[in-house]
Length: 411
Image 1 (cartoon, rainbow, N blue to C red):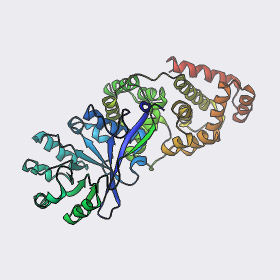
Image 2 (cartoon, helix red, strand yellow; image 1 turned 45 degrees about the vertical axis):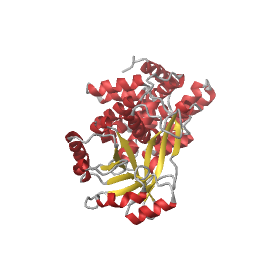
Image 3 (spheres, rainbow, N blue to C red; image 1 turned 180 degrees about the horizontal axis):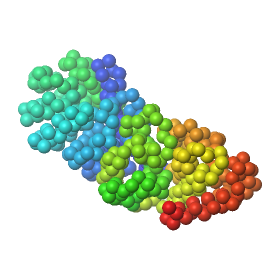
């Protein structure tokens, strides 16, 4: 598979004094090289790491129960895009290239008060950092820049500050033991593990859809309009659901519909995600795939069926659930994402999961009917219709509305 069609992220463990994993540092990796960064723009790299973690892989897959260290450049640090990140799960590493200014100190104070954990990356003691030393939780000391045998006097300058010390680029057992004796709290380096590259099939949501969504959010569009944009793109919908599970809601509440996911996440968080996605993108073309249109039509068709199906009377959320089932059902064909992975990652309602995985339940019958009609298998379609008690005339009307919705002629 072309590396450009994959999400790539590096992950290196950070250990505690008992040599147990305390956290992971998440590192930018490019399609040009899987083992090094090839960073042309530090802010773009930061945005890519955040996006890939939250809406590419899902934060649970990347971090499990551990924290994640993420390098942040000034542009991202000063933006509100960081509010996307779950504060208890991330450590923001301030790059050594950042200039200490009153604005930087004030921003760090705001972030700490908001609940973020801050760290200084590749750091060498300097009195100009005095205020920051009282704000950060961790200072990383690079052993390649400061050999371990010369660390004693330097560490004495840190003793009266409240932060913990992390030794990075620990390359040998000897260096680890010396740092342990010196009182370091955490350790990172090739002695323990080289950064592992994690890959996943990339979903290209397309710059056109992102720009449209951003305009709607900037114009304070209604939720129906925003929902419609998500409905037109299986990729956007999949990322929305992954994002909801990553940010702060994982495991708390099953996602019922696309609108439910939008409401759970909120406009502000969606806007931050879109801005980051545009910031990180180095290719804004829309992937042209007829299956994407097919997914939108299938979802709309199933939505129309739910409106007329006698079995779903009294279930107001059924049309939206049917639509989400339809649009997600083609992810495997479009993006090579196994359907059991979709169901597992997205915290979907039981009814939607059973429909996607086993074609069970009313939504499962809708999906099987849609597939049969797409394949002109009218014998199977007639059998399913009998079980659903839906007249064929209403199925034809649902098909007409579905294609009309895709073309924007159905309200």
